[in-house]
Image (cartoon, rainbow, N blue to C red; front, side, top):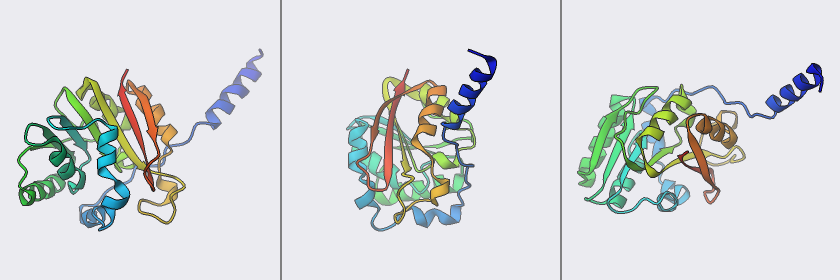
Length: 212
């Protein structure tokens, strides 16, 4: 095969790779948008937790926890014998989650102030969940590599993002949404293997990963 032919094949393969949109910035004043009244109906948190095998007594990380909407539901699922680690890079977000936990009477939640490169989660977690945060990551491979280190050998990472054909529902503009193949490719670079691609959600998809 000629050098030119090889170059053409390389360019063609590269053209098939979906691009990653530029990362977005979340403003604390937008916290209220994370808890629309119908979110339980379309988010289906119990089905997501079932898909990740999250049960009583588990230790779970919630990366980019925001207002703590999912953190509270995770804490109720794992019960008093379990522990949820709510992570965010903005202290104001963690304060919001602390207030939500106090209102809910939950004391099985830890609070982790992460960085743009490392969520600083504890080790040996049964599961880590990232819901609607992937588009905000400045260095997703670094984040995923550190998440992988935090997982137990049988632990699972769940990434929930909005479908690119989900016009008419919640979520960012279509051109800001992440193609699942981009996440799968970047997760592979971080040492994570795809276990399942779930499509039971109306507006989102769920990718489940484990350590290689």
